[in-house]
Length: 283
Image (tube, rainbow, N blue to C red; front, side, top):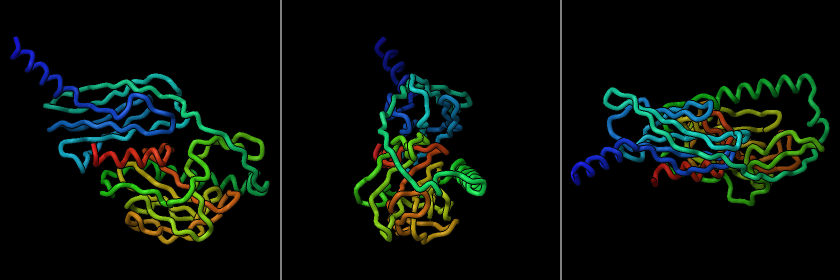
């Protein structure tokens, strides 16, 4: 009887290999899932309307990981995350419960010149084209991971506006703050948070001078309102390299760095994402 019990426990431990780093998550945060198993393939997860592939964790043997980004607008309730993979020719399903809660983000009022706030046909056309171009980039997922060191902040200065804050422009609620703002006078050197390939390097209406880095496997970091951009699309940039200089370009009230993250096309809290990505090597 004891032998049968031990065998059963080993079987259960081998079967239920899925680990999730948290059971409760704020909207616009990211969840890390991993599976430590040998000889499996086609590892995927389904959450609500998202289907995400797992990748081999290059820092851990026989381990697969997935990043699950939670939308800012995700409904706050209980969900079930379903993971599947092929083992010995059979498709295995595992599941974990995940509760999405309200991040309780703040609100702030911003007044900007009407010439930059009120759209006109030319601006509408430009911003739609820039958005479509950016989303095409963000929704592209490369198979290779392009970094092997921890992510860093692009600046070590005071944070002047947190991620997620509701933005009220000229008395109208328009959006939420899609990144973290760092204090930076014009001309301050901005560092690449980690290594990757530049996928956007251009002046845009809202974001001004913009550089977007693809770090691989669906992870992108973004640096906005730059006065100078040192790299062009296609360049490989190493962690800590000066990618450009801060400025006050685009729709802003003053000079600063707007730092943001996209994971699998979804805007997430960049500081939370950095903390999570740096766990990959430590789990």
